[in-house]
Length: 218
Image (tube, rainbow, N blue to C red):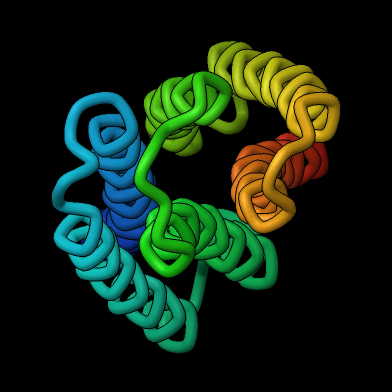
């Protein structure tokens, strides 16, 4: 009887630890989503506080870094993990890349002393906010990776949004060079559009990796 109680207690502890790691990943995804919302608001409503917005995103990025290190610490101590340690590390690392890429857009906009928003830039930030919302849903479903139907649906949504981002990027860069004008202006906006595309790619890279990891474990 005592052995049964001990086994039950161990099972509960393992389940709680698994829940904890998935919860930490969800919170980190929510930070990425919040970054996307702040960025979109900045490009649609409030360019006057670019430095403030960049600092706000930097604070969130710092919070995400702390959570990344918490996940590393958890993996170092955990005897059993719901997914391979290496896979959880890859997920956490690529999530950090997503947040960094969003923060990089606002910082570049500030450093390049941009004072206007091209329509394609506003399209990009709206897209990034949508990708952030979908990313949260991916991570909410990750604990249920043995039954991944809904998880895969959200991954497909992000893939679709990233494809729209590719279309915006090609159109924006072509129009930029077709219009010509001040070379410095062209260079600045090309750099901005490249940052937007990199950000969208980081979302797709993350969820494609998650899909591969899930497939490996089902």
